[in-house]
Length: 256
Image (cartoon, rainbow, N blue to C red; front, side):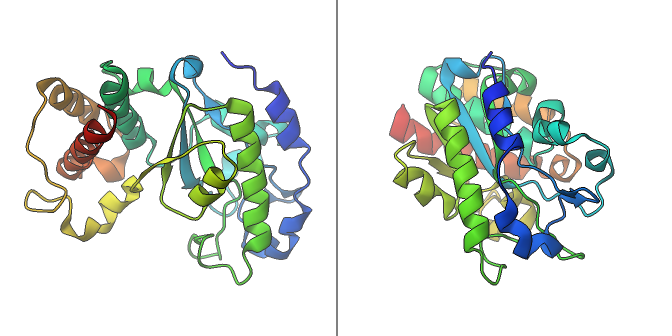
């Protein structure tokens, strides 16, 4: 298992004073100030395939109880304690499909898949205006200091973890990753799109629908969906099936 102590020390001591102009909009704070940036969760078998997942932002609510009770070093290590990233289970399933296409392995449980990945959010500081989460890509008056700090942190963790594959949601950050020459991200639609209507793409008659093709993959998808416990996604299992099958088809053409 990769030793994370060096990265933990770096993030714990990172200068985040450039965020002071946004402090009123940052929900990851308490009476001691802003929470420090956090390091990725790294599974015990990460080095075998080197798959690194970037979600977007943690969206911690204002006055978050459990984090306010943590020490600063525990806040840096928060994902090692609890992978509070959504929708992580759908992302684990997506990795399972990727591993099957790329390496012809069939890992049947989401908990086992988790141990083969590293996962975090690209943006390390949650933004909330008191009533709703704020999208850092489009809702800050002057986002450049916020972007710059998060870019620096994310590039440092990529340099440290040296992934073979980065799976990432759409956004400006992918150009930053490409520009640093550290990876050419595999870009996917954020699975939260499943909850947002997805423009009808994930219906049986939608543009993402594909007929079943591979019985092994269909069996994997069925098993993955049966293990999803995140409440909002449990009622969207038909859409998740179409979402996973579409990426199986796409990756089979590019990677298979």
